[in-house]
Image (cartoon, rainbow, N blue to C red; front, side, top):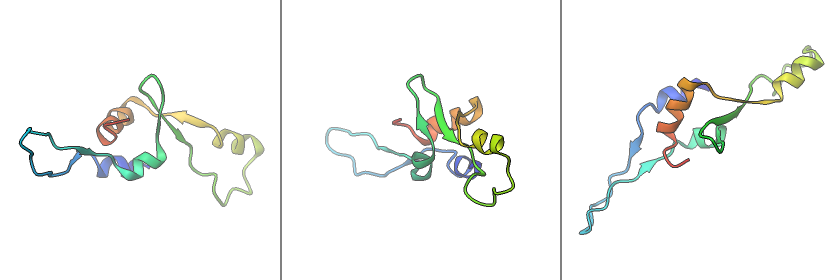
Length: 88
């Protein structure tokens, strides 16, 4: 999960030929982060917890229920996600 954020520390730009109107270049959103993080109304991002896909038959019901909930990202991740997802 953190590999996505560290691999895309800088926002990527697309080199578009400049028009006569002086249009600015557009920023690309990181496609992996778009699928994993969802913006909330107050500027935070929501994500799912990992560890629930497989090899969890020995987990207690309490642990499975806890892993099935979504959580908000922390402040460090939020700053990185605002750079990686500029239009969210």
